[in-house]
Length: 165
Image (cartoon, rainbow, N blue to C red; front, top):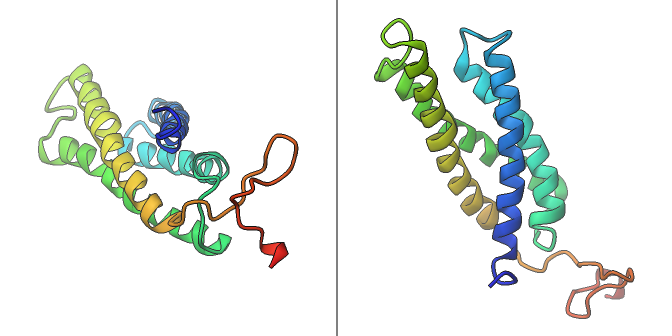
């Protein structure tokens, strides 16, 4: 089972690391220079984590997938990540500005719990589900498109070697 879902597990590990990056930056900004702009703080945190995520997903999670030129792949990755960023922000926008779960309408603790649940939990789940689906469909569409190196430096015998053609 581990081998069958290796790609998903790696994607989840990269997502976990990206989550830590997002939270560190988001709360660092939210409690210092962006105290009155929590959605902006969240979006900056997600943006920085997305850059990390591209490199980690390309080189580890989806290392054998491809099918696109690198510039096209990167452009699609960041475009779809921007869509996911919007999905990530929607629950917190609704929480803050539609449901009015912000000060002075509610207490500070309620506001922070609502921000965490809506922006961090629900938003992250929405964005992650969209990324997993869209990256496999459009960014890294072809399985075994990039040769994998063996520990000794050789290529897997099932991989296509473009230099031999």
